[in-house]
Length: 394
Length: 227
Ligand SMILES: Nc1ncnc2c1ncn2[C@@H]1O[C@H](COP(=O)(O)OP(=O)(O)OP(=O)(O)O)[C@@H](O)[C@H]1O
Ligand SMILES: [Mg+2]
Image 1 (cartoon, rainbow over the protein chains, first blue to last red):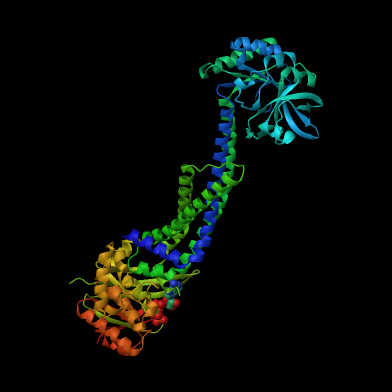
Image 2: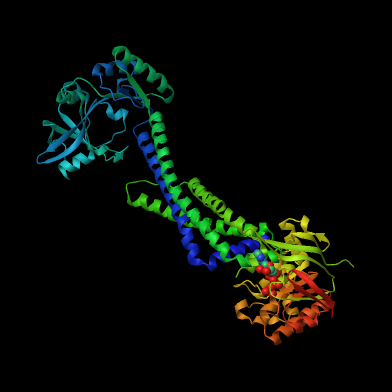
């Protein structure tokens, strides 16, 4: 009964000072909205990246030169195509071992040019990574063994160079060397911040000749099953180290990449949420401030309530409820605003956003806690007011 | 018959920036359940201070004070509030009604702190408003009522808990004399029904109607006489 009265009085007080209540809530609204929206964007980005890494193909093992440790400089590769053969023997299936040498090159067709990422690869690349062709055909084993100058264009490069025309069979130059287009990829979009539609695949041998090297940058292995990945990883690294005793090699799985990316994004999301949380804190201070004003304004009312039998606790609860009501209403409005912003960002910007129920529950809980924390001092002050002094106040 | 309130040699000293101001300097007074007492005295003589003590709104700095047989020195603020709620009704010169709140809800307020349900509160409040002749004003807000009506709402609020003592500090101070008379008549009829009434007044005529007159000066009772 007393609690019901406290609710009624608290609501009444907020209604009596509508503009002031709304302005006070605004701080909480903005804080909660920022937390919800930023956490949504963080979650959405993480989800997208996970999807993309998974989209590379399952059970993938990437082998690169050097050590993958924080602070270690990227190492120059010592691997050659002979190493690929050796690794393929370890894996037992040469279709599961892809090799790459990559270089940024200017690609021209007639008067048009595009900056593309030239990837010197083996013919088995589509069976290791998920890459689908839009038109034409992929590189063949013969293309690779003979170092034929043929190219498969990413969707973006194809559009830049040829527009709506069919590129198949046409001539392009890569780094000034002539190639013939034999196929185009389906559009992929961005992956891990890299535009994958500007890739241009050519036989690894042709790329090596163009770049004047016999090295490759790295290997990718599609393990037959998940259980064997770790074992495979060790034996591949051992094989390579045996062949190049002076070099280090590292193998990473998708799970490891996901784990690292997830950690980085988690920290980023946390930092963003914390910054947003500061505005929530500022909102809380505003609530505290207004509650102190409210207590002062209603000193006489407090005195009267005490005179007719209100205990300090009854008065305290009444003002605490008022503060909590202020912040939770602000919290609900902030959630609505945050969700709306996240949906708009998701729909109208390249940044993905996903709303999770826990972030909403957290935002609501936090706004209630902010009300309690910042309402407690004004509430205590109200509860402790001396009734005589309060009644004498004019 | 046990006395409603017993004050023995009570004093109240305020500490004003290190300087102590004695508002009451040893006052002894007993209020019987059927009493009708008027307290008079010059401004600043300590009348309101005494009323606040008698009603358990304040605590003496010296002496002993029993309200409803209980020594207030042993009670915490919560227990004091309960004591006020159960035994005392206050009426103030400036009414002290809650604005934006109807007459009925104003009257029902003490019952909130007694823990009664809304329906029961409203029933008793309506009954009490009828009792003070305001059956037609239950849904009016203070700013929609005259001073006399507001004071009768305040009296209804003081009575709704069925207190044994009604403390009224200059209840007619803000009213014209005709309205004041009707408020007094109301207090007197309550007194005849067994509620002790203690009122502070500056008006000799009002004081003369009480059964007992107490004159205060400088924080002391200087004379006490049955009329
Ligand atoms: N909170 C306080 N702090 C300091 N002194 C106070 C306080 N309250 C009252 N006093 C002093 O106590 C004395 C008695 O005050 P009180 O209000 O009881 O007088 P009163 O008889 O009711 O006067 P009036 O007829 O004007 O209402 C006064 O001198 C007053 O200044
Ligand atoms: Mg006074």
